[in-house]
Length: 148
Image 1 (tube, rainbow, N blue to C red):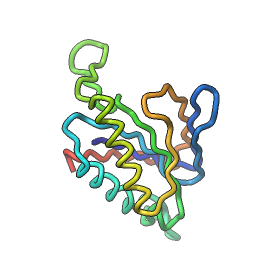
Image 2: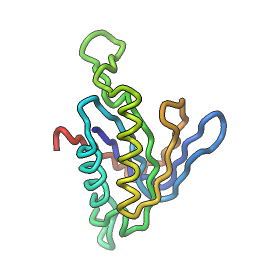
Image 3: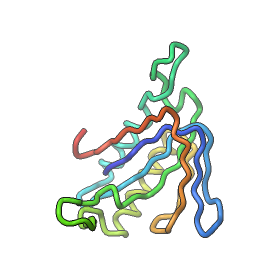
Protein backbone atom coordinates (compact mmCIF):
# COMPACT_ATOMS: atom_id res chain seq x y z
CA UNK A 1 0.00 0.00 0.00
CA UNK A 2 1.25 3.44 -0.88
CA UNK A 3 -0.03 6.61 0.72
CA UNK A 4 1.00 10.11 -0.23
CA UNK A 5 0.43 12.45 2.70
CA UNK A 6 -0.01 16.13 1.96
CA UNK A 7 -0.25 18.49 4.88
CA UNK A 8 -3.17 20.74 4.06
CA UNK A 9 -4.68 24.01 5.24
CA UNK A 10 -7.97 23.15 3.51
CA UNK A 11 -8.99 20.62 0.88
CA UNK A 12 -12.06 19.26 -0.83
CA UNK A 13 -13.26 16.69 -3.33
CA UNK A 14 -15.98 17.24 -5.93
CA UNK A 15 -17.79 14.53 -7.90
CA UNK A 16 -20.31 15.44 -10.62
CA UNK A 17 -20.16 19.10 -9.55
CA UNK A 18 -21.11 18.22 -5.96
CA UNK A 19 -18.85 18.61 -2.94
CA UNK A 20 -18.67 15.19 -1.30
CA UNK A 21 -15.90 15.82 1.21
CA UNK A 22 -13.93 18.71 2.66
CA UNK A 23 -11.57 19.38 5.53
CA UNK A 24 -9.84 22.27 7.20
CA UNK A 25 -6.33 21.74 8.61
CA UNK A 26 -5.13 18.17 8.30
CA UNK A 27 -3.88 15.54 5.89
CA UNK A 28 -4.95 14.74 2.38
CA UNK A 29 -4.15 11.08 1.77
CA UNK A 30 -3.80 9.71 -1.75
CA UNK A 31 -4.13 5.96 -1.27
CA UNK A 32 -2.98 3.25 -3.68
CA UNK A 33 -3.44 -0.48 -3.21
CA UNK A 34 -1.47 -3.21 -4.98
CA UNK A 35 -2.58 -6.83 -5.47
CA UNK A 36 -0.18 -8.07 -2.76
CA UNK A 37 -1.60 -5.84 -0.03
CA UNK A 38 -3.42 -7.20 3.00
CA UNK A 39 -5.16 -5.75 6.04
CA UNK A 40 -1.74 -5.72 7.73
CA UNK A 41 -0.52 -3.19 5.12
CA UNK A 42 -3.55 -0.97 5.78
CA UNK A 43 -3.01 -1.21 9.55
CA UNK A 44 0.69 -0.34 9.17
CA UNK A 45 -0.05 2.75 7.07
CA UNK A 46 -2.85 3.94 9.37
CA UNK A 47 -0.63 3.50 12.42
CA UNK A 48 2.22 5.48 10.79
CA UNK A 49 -0.11 8.28 9.72
CA UNK A 50 -1.70 8.49 13.17
CA UNK A 51 1.73 9.14 14.73
CA UNK A 52 3.34 11.16 11.91
CA UNK A 53 4.62 14.50 13.24
CA UNK A 54 4.31 17.03 10.42
CA UNK A 55 2.87 20.07 12.21
CA UNK A 56 4.97 22.82 13.75
CA UNK A 57 5.26 23.29 17.49
CA UNK A 58 5.90 26.62 19.26
CA UNK A 59 9.55 26.48 18.05
CA UNK A 60 8.56 25.97 14.39
CA UNK A 61 9.78 22.35 14.47
CA UNK A 62 7.63 19.69 12.79
CA UNK A 63 6.97 17.96 16.08
CA UNK A 64 3.18 17.70 16.41
CA UNK A 65 0.90 14.93 15.19
CA UNK A 66 -2.47 15.24 13.51
CA UNK A 67 -4.22 14.44 16.80
CA UNK A 68 -2.29 17.14 18.66
CA UNK A 69 -3.50 19.82 16.23
CA UNK A 70 -7.02 18.34 16.07
CA UNK A 71 -6.66 17.88 12.32
CA UNK A 72 -8.89 16.07 9.87
CA UNK A 73 -8.26 13.63 7.01
CA UNK A 74 -9.42 13.67 3.41
CA UNK A 75 -8.72 10.21 1.97
CA UNK A 76 -8.78 9.71 -1.81
CA UNK A 77 -8.33 6.37 -3.60
CA UNK A 78 -5.54 6.68 -6.17
CA UNK A 79 -4.70 3.58 -8.23
CA UNK A 80 -2.26 5.64 -10.33
CA UNK A 81 0.26 5.52 -7.45
CA UNK A 82 1.19 2.10 -8.84
CA UNK A 83 1.85 3.34 -12.38
CA UNK A 84 4.74 1.66 -14.17
CA UNK A 85 6.45 4.14 -16.48
CA UNK A 86 9.49 2.09 -17.56
CA UNK A 87 8.28 1.31 -21.08
CA UNK A 88 6.87 3.87 -23.47
CA UNK A 89 5.00 7.01 -22.58
CA UNK A 90 1.69 5.53 -21.48
CA UNK A 91 1.81 4.21 -17.90
CA UNK A 92 0.79 0.65 -17.11
CA UNK A 93 -1.35 0.05 -14.04
CA UNK A 94 -0.97 -3.74 -13.76
CA UNK A 95 0.55 -3.40 -10.28
CA UNK A 96 -2.61 -1.74 -8.95
CA UNK A 97 -5.02 -4.10 -7.21
CA UNK A 98 -8.21 -5.20 -8.89
CA UNK A 99 -11.07 -2.87 -7.89
CA UNK A 100 -12.84 -5.33 -5.56
CA UNK A 101 -9.68 -5.89 -3.45
CA UNK A 102 -8.60 -2.27 -3.63
CA UNK A 103 -11.96 -0.94 -2.47
CA UNK A 104 -12.13 -3.42 0.41
CA UNK A 105 -8.64 -2.46 1.66
CA UNK A 106 -9.22 1.25 1.07
CA UNK A 107 -12.40 1.10 3.19
CA UNK A 108 -10.57 -0.95 5.85
CA UNK A 109 -7.72 1.61 5.88
CA UNK A 110 -10.19 4.47 6.44
CA UNK A 111 -11.86 2.55 9.28
CA UNK A 112 -8.45 2.04 10.89
CA UNK A 113 -7.87 5.81 10.76
CA UNK A 114 -11.28 6.41 12.33
CA UNK A 115 -10.31 3.88 15.01
CA UNK A 116 -7.37 6.15 15.86
CA UNK A 117 -9.92 8.90 16.56
CA UNK A 118 -9.75 10.89 13.32
CA UNK A 119 -12.57 12.42 11.31
CA UNK A 120 -12.11 10.97 7.81
CA UNK A 121 -13.78 12.44 4.75
CA UNK A 122 -13.51 10.53 1.47
CA UNK A 123 -14.16 10.77 -2.20
CA UNK A 124 -15.92 7.89 -3.94
CA UNK A 125 -13.94 4.82 -4.92
CA UNK A 126 -13.58 4.53 -8.70
CA UNK A 127 -15.20 7.88 -9.47
CA UNK A 128 -13.72 10.73 -11.47
CA UNK A 129 -12.97 13.36 -8.84
CA UNK A 130 -11.68 16.89 -8.71
CA UNK A 131 -9.51 17.24 -5.63
CA UNK A 132 -8.48 20.68 -4.40
CA UNK A 133 -5.53 20.70 -2.02
CA UNK A 134 -4.04 23.75 -0.36
CA UNK A 135 -0.72 22.14 0.56
CA UNK A 136 0.79 23.65 3.71
CA UNK A 137 4.55 24.01 3.64
CA UNK A 138 4.52 22.41 1.15
CA UNK A 139 4.85 19.13 3.02
CA UNK A 140 4.43 15.87 1.11
CA UNK A 141 5.48 12.46 2.47
CA UNK A 142 5.26 8.99 0.92
CA UNK A 143 4.53 5.89 2.98
CA UNK A 144 4.97 2.49 1.33
CA UNK A 145 4.08 -0.56 3.42
CA UNK A 146 6.44 -2.74 1.35
CA UNK A 147 9.41 -0.36 1.81
CA UNK A 148 9.11 0.94 5.38
